[in-house]
Length: 252
Image (cartoon, rainbow, N blue to C red):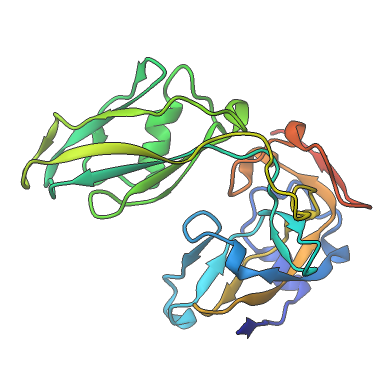
């Protein structure tokens, strides 16, 4: 099933895109087709809460993209592989806090019903995790796991798995918290063409669940705040770019 939606320049300019450092190149994007089967819910897209979209999924803008050689479709850029760890609470706690420990540093208490933003703030308060070193999605706890993706100084590193303590959780039935590594960090493993950066998805797009393709717009030259991309991305680790790609990276 394909899902193609019209785009307008006005939509592109007014969209909420903190990763976009300027409007250079926004009027000169390429129309592309995304292979939706290559994207991951929670990381790349979410189900819209807007009732007008009637349960459609929304792909985040600013996702780095590569072109699949065999199909000509676009998929997430698969340069150095980021470590992904999942934090899950069980036992249905109704109060209290838990902590996460990363390489010897332990967070302050994280609420039992924490959002992804609260978990991110707790981790970034550690001395060994800086702003931009983790992207956190999913949640809120306790019903939904939180997914921590390492980037920044840890991009492509097989980092130590965090440990968790749920001794501060209360209520429920034997509440506990656990961490699991779902993707180990490492160097680029793709050989399908997506290991070469082709550009960035310039605007959010919506598509129906079950769709396999959707139209998008590719920013192939312009200015980007890499630390504000919706997935961890470090331009210093980009080893290969598609022909013609000219992206300047700025810092705030």
